[in-house]
Amino acid sequence: MDKINQTFTSEFLLLGFSGYPKLEIMYFVLILVMYLVILTGNGVLIIASIFDSRLHTPMYFFLGNLSFLDICYTSSSVPSTLVSLISKKRNISFSGCAVQMFFGFAMGSTECFLLGMMAFDRYVAICNPLRYPIIMSKVVYVLMASVSWLSGGINSIVQTSLAMQLPFCGNNVINHFTCEILAVLKLACTDISLNIITMVISNMAFLVLPLIVIFFSYMFILYTILRMNSATGRRKAFSTCSAHLTVVIIFYGTIFFMYAKPKSQEFPGNKLQTSDKLISLFYGVVTPMLNPIIYSLRNKDVKIAVKCLLNQKAIQ
Image 1 (cartoon, rainbow, N blue to C red):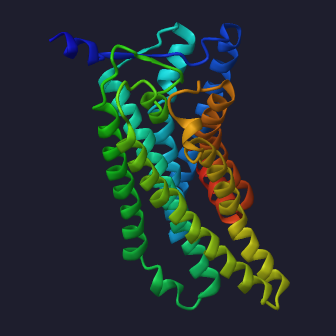
Image 2 (cartoon, rainbow, N blue to C red; image 1 turned 30 degrees about the vertical axis):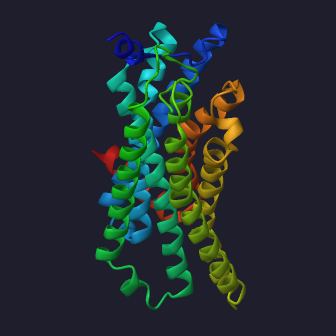
């Protein structure tokens, strides 16, 4: 019975940025503003992709999924982070931590696959334009998005279940501002080799494989664009790909920093540094905020659809 009591943890304590109390108000205001921009920007993109017939294409269907994913991901962690910053209430229940971890991992895994699907869509559109309506039919792109969501959810269930069944021996202080899986694994007082192995497999499937698809898709796209005789055609092709490529670079740059570091840097023995927290914050808040801005600024169809939507609201 004593052993059971020692290994059971009913709640966790999130340290967040408690080491910098004078900066917490600034962080609160900054994160709140960015969260409102995320809700507004991604919400407008979702509504535009649904109600504007010009955006009823595979690319904008994937973009609508990406926007919905960003809202879900940030809403699973940002509100609790804001509460902890303003009220100093830093505890989170065991089940609440598991839910937060699940949504964070599921949304991240799904986004990896969605970005790969979007790259393949651009490859077909530019390299095989005549066959594009056949290859990327509605059934196909809906199925592609469904596979992304389902695989991301299954991956998260596996990772979250393995992490939350570990014994924590009363050590419940998470040196992070959310229940991020790597920070939670550092609290375990048992061997986590199985967790490490499954995470490596997960990284290969959800980070490396989509990145390979993206890389080869853009190699073929670049080859096709350079062979185009029309300067206007080249500019149009570049413009349709530049937004997606920018998002991919930002997303993969931050996620590889967090999940693809050497084992010695990830697991017990090293404290999570402030720079790691800021990178995690960038991945969790800044990237979802930038996505709609990048796509709306770099895409004429989206700008026109958003303007029409705003004009309709103004008339009403």
